[in-house]
Image 1 (cartoon, rainbow, N blue to C red):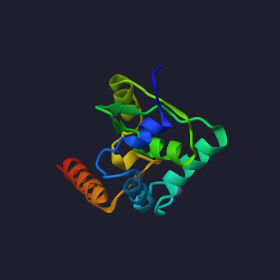
Image 2: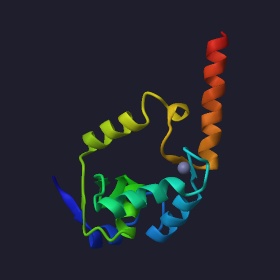
Image 3: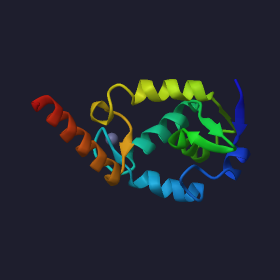
Image 4: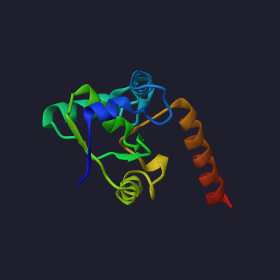
Length: 133
Ligand SMILES: [Zn+2]
């Protein structure tokens, strides 16, 4: 399995953010799906990486983290020297396993922003509309 070093990861900007510091602030504001607390999902992931020393693989494309920003941030915080990489195909399978068939409404782990919540609300209304027809 291929991998990326911590220093390589630190030199790359995360997708959708200017810096890892910016990304950390973003993750701290995301609402946990298990309890609604801001940043709780990331803190649980940080604790998992800290206690096991292992980071689940991330997917990078063109030198940037494309999937696994929470995992990458946990690796940075816990100073994990080498972070395993997964392929685009493995990343896609992971996404489907974690989020795909159930959609946002069926998820019990992970986190969400307030703007993403408006999409969940829209999905729920569309489903209800479909069920009523
Ligand atoms: Zn929680």
